[in-house]
Length: 157
Image 1 (spheres, rainbow, N blue to C red):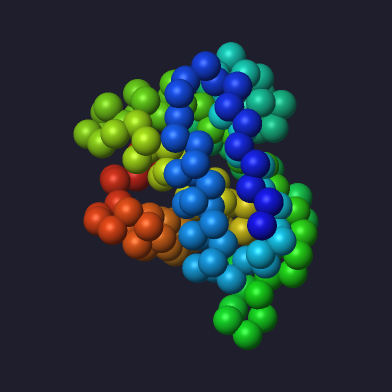
Image 2 (image 1 turned 180 degrees about the vertical axis):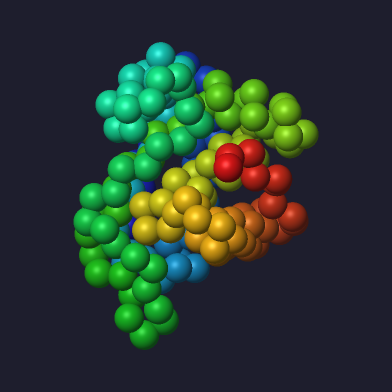
């Protein structure tokens, strides 16, 4: 399992916990143990640039996902094939503001955003109400199991 974290944000983040969370999600969703994931932590100007390039939307956002091999969750009998899951970009500065507004820690917000980003890489979306319910329910379930307590309140819509 190759999970790489590159912190270019200038903010100290518990990178090891992001890797541990990612491994946990890979195991729970039967992602091939050799699947590759890259997590990039960037500051607000870099995130705004990515947001414009990828989504054609101005302003820094909290998390962006760029899927590579279009992998989807596996099953106990048929795990996801080996491949490149993709890249996630997270902005700790945006996460800090969202966490403060939601009443939980910045690290909890970072874990929430990483979970959200991984689910996007696996094909989940929240454009439609049914999709949102499925994705956010799974997000809460995974994060609650990982944390051993209720997951923090979602800060993204």
